[in-house]
Length: 144
Image (tube, rainbow, N blue to C red; front, side):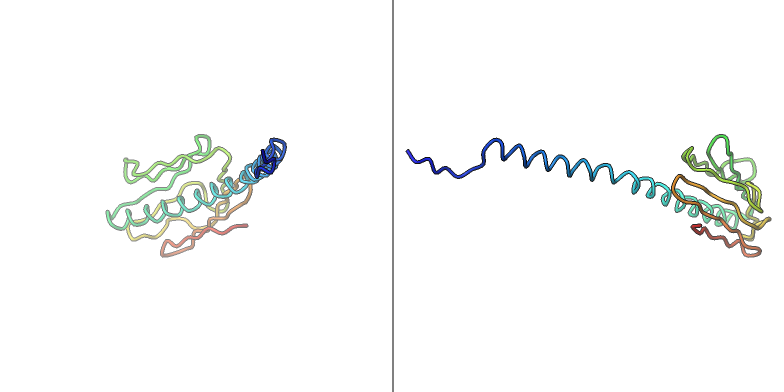
């Protein structure tokens, strides 16, 4: 009987398997910061899209659209007249802080805003600044 069998022993297989498990567990722990960063970017992107939607709604329906933040409930809403056209929850880890503009402003029927200034959005990883410009209802969000 030939004893020259080609294959791996049980010990060699266990060593390779344990190294694989160690490497895969390290990678799983390193995904946590990327997940939080992705959530932050998703919130900012969704928030900007909602503001554009509110502005377009104000122009197309020729009515005021209010943007209201409810800090304690961790949500913001777009209100046209007495109806909420949009309500969005956000993570309790995200805080929106009043700057030179209060946590309430509105888009007028021509797309402009009634107030201008800045407000701050802080997340566990980064801080952002929302700046609403005077005239034309333009705004932008930058990372600080």
